[in-house]
Structure formats: C-alpha cells, structure tokens
Length: 84
Image 1: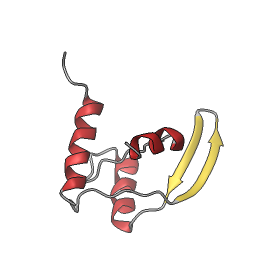
Image 2: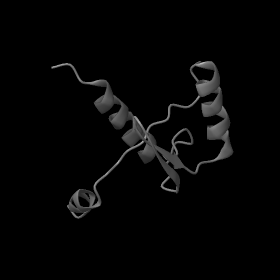
Image 3: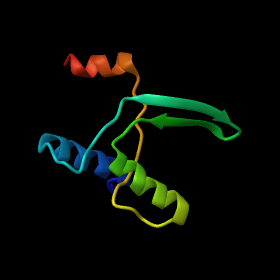
C-alpha cells in the first residue's frame, strides 16, 4: 500500500527532531482560542521568523519557507506511549 502524505511528513519530522534540525520548531504556548462558524481558530506563540513567513503565505497565497501544522494530542494517550 502507498504510504500517505501525513505519515511521510511525521517520519521526516521525527528524523529532523533526532538531528536537532534548526528547520524544525514546536510551540506549546497557546495564546488565543476564538470560535467561529467553521469551528475555532487557535493561536500559538512562535518566533517572529515564522510569523512573518506565514503572514506572507496568507496574504499572497504563495508557498513560504515554512510549512505550519498543529497536532492535538490526547494527554492520557501520550502518557501511555511515553511510559513504554
């Protein structure tokens, strides 16, 4: 079976984390949650270099230097895996 894109990205992220790669950063600093018709908009704190790049992507629709994504991880499930 062909490997899906999400799995490929996660595998690459794991390798980048193992290498302590500068191109990978993670934020767990939640700064805002707003509800709207489509669901919610969740804001995270990050270094300014990410914000400037992502603003250009939103404003002009062009591919930026950074690929942004968010993970929502159930804490109880995470603890099970961390304790293995």
